[in-house]
Amino acid sequence: MKRILAVLFVLVAVTGMFAQDFVFSNASEPTLDPSLQTDTASTNVYLGLFEGLVQYDPKTSRAIPAVAESWTISKDGTVITFKLRKNATWSDGHPVTAQDFVYAMRRILDPKTGAEYAYFPAMVIKGADAFNSGKGKAEDVGYKAIDANTLEVSLTGPAPYAVDMMAHSSFGPVPQWAVEKFGNDWTKPSNIVTNGPYLLKDWKVQEYLLMEKNPKYWDAKNVKIKSIKVLPGDNDTTNYNMFKNGEVDWTHGIAVSKIDEIKLRKDFQASPQVATYYISLNIAKKPFDDVRVRKALAMAIDKKAIVDKITKAGQIPTDAMVPPLAGYTPQKGAGFNPEQAKKLLAEAGFPGGKGFPAFTYIYNTNEGHKAIGEFIQQSWKNVLGIDCTLQNMEFKTLLDLRDKQRDFTVSRNGWVGDYIDPNTMLELFISDSGNNAGNYKNADFDKLIEKARTAKVSDRYKIFQQAETMLLTRDQALIPIYHYVNLDMIDASKWGGWYPNPIGFHPWKFMYKK
Image 1 (cartoon, rainbow, N blue to C red):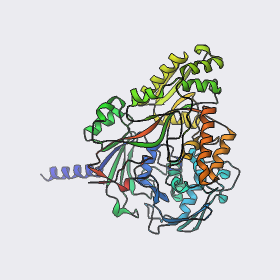
Image 2 (image 1 turned 180 degrees about the horizontal axis):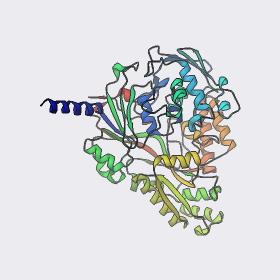
Image 3 (image 1 turned 60 degrees about the vertical axis):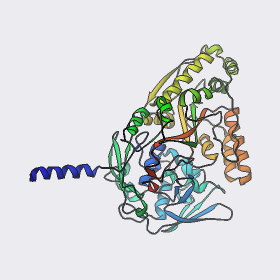
Image 4 (image 1 turned 120 degrees about the vertical axis):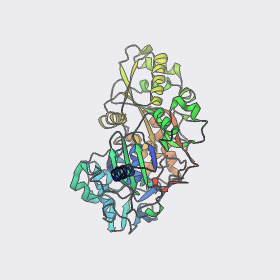
């Protein structure tokens, strides 16, 4: 009997050690290093393990205090002074200081780091672009530790969205001592040091990632969910079935094939999102370097039919990159025009598609992306007489080919805004942007985006509209398909602190079981 009880005790202990209070189905395996993150799946985990100066408000997506308890902005809007909490600590007991943010900023901007998102802080931080491009010094970057709890940030101009930007992981702190000791291995479970509401308890790649409440977090008393299991599955049908069976508490994204059934459920959550689904065209490769070809491809696609017949969840068909925002009018774009598409392709030297080279449309494995890809493939065949091959791949492989190597011709793409402003959708396409997958380079466009950064608030939107018109109406640098809506499965009668919001990020620290 004693032996049986002992075995049972061990089993309970082992299973309890990996028990979780909440299960989330993420889209893919995350990258844990804040300086190297590029996708929403990684941000979802970042919001548990790390915390920056500010946090996303769970309702509005605007910046609210986090490690910084307060901040002041100079009269000219170019200097922000943050006051850090004195009780904020790292998981190993080190205090979180202003120097941690200075180190992290210099690290992400250092060209040796090779961070794709370095351009993001470089847009607004004084001296950051020069350092990132190898033309300036680290000490000239406008991130200064006045003392352990005071960080002074100097901007390139009065960017009204700068504080909202700082909720993003590219502005997150990094523990210098851990990075220097372990190098690229510093994010392994046995080495990682974090400062967020949760600790990395376990990580089995392609199986799960387990986060547990961090007792050293400065606001630990208000963190209600004790443990969170994050699954990397990208199969929406599997995720939906797991949700129905009670194996998953929240899944982002839905199974297109089940949409009619899903829309009838009370636990289906849909809301507008600052995000756009689009096609990247590699302008560096022929014949996509010809604007007539790019416009022909765009005009041959009936975006409304995609939304009505495939996605069917309230997405907004569009020819613009920037979603509708208060006070901003997106440009109209090329529109669905099959006859003009044929004419333009003929003018480019490919009448009826004759002589058009073979190419491949790549997308990450997902039934929705597959259905959309097949629709577009057929549209180009029927309207233009050209053939393309579809190729699906794991998400990280797609990111590597499309965003790092830029070794593709046509690719599925999508962008969720990092803050609520037209700039978050347009800055992707400046010449040196790490997210400019299509290699669009236009000095006039770059100048407009730069001008908007330092312009008066009353003039900014007009400048952005000029830039978007140049990007799409004149150059057709990409093909917008639709503006996303947030699509989630979560029982709001069971879980509190989760709200529909414009960006679609949901900080874990605010969630609780009702």
